[in-house]
Image (cartoon, rainbow, N blue to C red; front, top):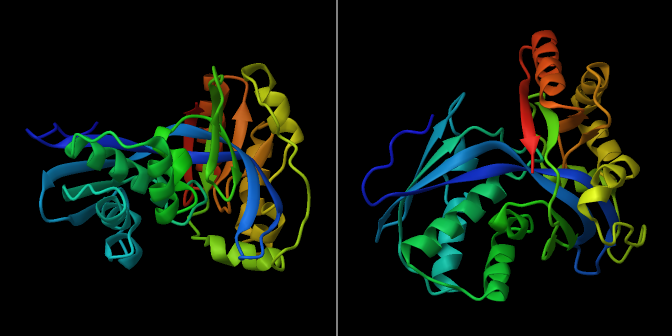
Length: 293
């Protein structure tokens, strides 16, 4: 349960981002990879609190472990978001951020990006500002390619390098289990293993229009084109997928650039039982039964 909110403070959740499909279409001449992805969010999250003020600082509390420099240093995406909000959006007022970190780091579920998007939402509120949507997306992209979809935190089709976000109306809630072997896996390593040269083209877009009624079929027929590359760098990804499949998940797949994997189940009870089974067999893993929305 979240601590009571002090007077004047603002708080929001930074939900885990799950790439239900992730298709690599190619690599642009500038080096960025062009993707299309069906994205949903999970009801497990970091929590970000802002005590508005004129000096911006960040404190981090970990659910487990001690925060490393990637969470406390100046390159943290919450602090980067606050700098870009001031320089690009003209929103100078931020303050003291407190990040309660529940999601694993470098895990392919957009934890840092979700934290940055949460910071932007809180800064908008602290400045009582209304920003043009296109300007907000440009600012979010400057923070990171996964940040735009995390602003609204709702199921969407994401294309380009992350800048094109199309929400899916009436997205059906999905019962799932998330598993991470507690092995950090950086996006850069996975894309390096994929090994695409600039201007290389792999495929054409296939998602098109995704409706509420076609979601499960789209997931079943989709794939994660980074999965094989991630497994070659981090074999534990394959172990996570096998554990989810063994617990009855259909399908089981890696999210993002890994190492977190998800499995879909028929209902909440099946997901909870599967999570208990996987956690019991792998006590060192991070395992959560979740609802995707």
